[in-house]
Length: 218
Image (cartoon, rainbow, N blue to C red; front, top):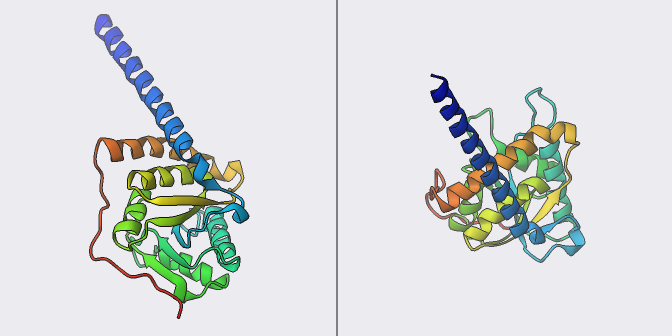
């Protein structure tokens, strides 16, 4: 029995070593491949007139305003005020009548002065991969500005590159580390999963459907 336990321990250690090595390599690959397309200065942002705003809940589990959501909305509205963006695709989860990320984003942007006529809702952005692929395949937009937080932007751009899209990211301010530690930690694993989804599992969006037109101001 002791011999079997030693063998199992050895196998477990080898597996863990491989897992963490692969995790680190995936994170390094994704960040280094995309960091040159991540912008924090609006004045330096390339002229990509369509923005894809990636969804998140507007409330935390405690019922408070979600700082990730609020800061993404602030950034999107500021880009519109400065004339950097003509149209928005708001992509997120729409799992029930009580949880609807795109509708919550539209309300927040309208409250910040963005007209509804330049907002298009994507209700099937269940994951970052789904949002990116649907932006190209359903809404016909391959030249985009992605709006999200910095740590999330690398993965979004990595997926965009895989699908041969001309994407850059305008990053929203990030909440304090205390508020974002768990989300950042999950992102390290999500980057590894993105590599597997794209290069091993051939993961596709859960929903595609018919092509749709963007709303445009008259």
